[in-house]
Length: 317
Picture 1 (cartoon, one colour):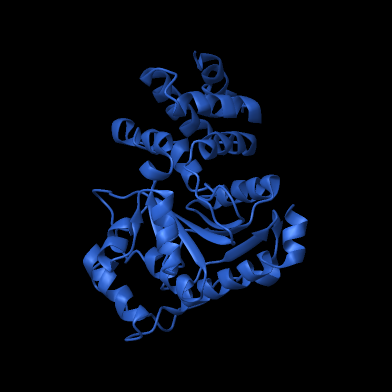
Picture 2 (spheres, helix red, strand yellow):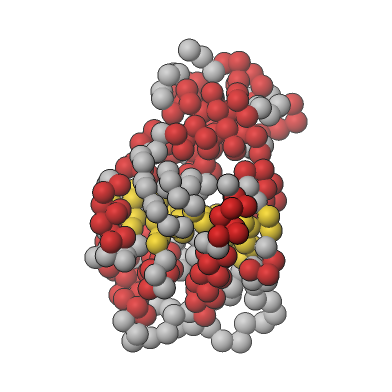
């Protein structure tokens, strides 16, 4: 098979390119993920989408194809899903802290993402330093949840075809639609999930809000901290809660404005062992958690409680 007809539509540059409908986007991504096309076609697809950007219909179609190729992770209760695909360079990566604080509140948490990055500190490395599960199967995720711990699973274990597409970056030097789709994965194949979806550029936040409305998703939407789904410990950013695709301002947080007069105590180094020790000190009660991360935990717990109400479950059916 060939995706040439799709490339002709999306590959005409920023001004001339046309977006695909949902069915075409699903077919295109299915062929790419299944490697039913050549490496040359995959490269053309990656570059064309990088220039054009994904429409909402394309996001829905691409995500559907990827979700169908994920392993079956079953959850019998609402689960918070944290996609961790950027890691950190300058400040400590506190995604694992967010996951642990949520687990302490009896919240089921699934983190998925990259396991290694030569230029960044990944959440998987910090999980390892904390002695937490880096699962390779649905069974190992269940085992972590049975211990009331958050679970991490690498993309290569959760959705191997998507992991291969993300790795194309190592060849062409640019992120592609696979990275975008990975951040939108529901993670679980059953049960309702509350995804923390983050973006880097403000204009993409608008596109994601349209996607959330279109798919009636349950999401906490935020600008990422170095691309991670955790609040910035130095200044809480805006946290927008959507349930069933509808904005819920009463559950959201406006974010901190004005001059920051007090900063939390953070480790001087952002390497994985130092960050793990810092997180362990917070979890053990030896030092307080950054107020911004605590506020995000409270926001997510409130949203999850609303999601778990019988009326909310009925509305989403």
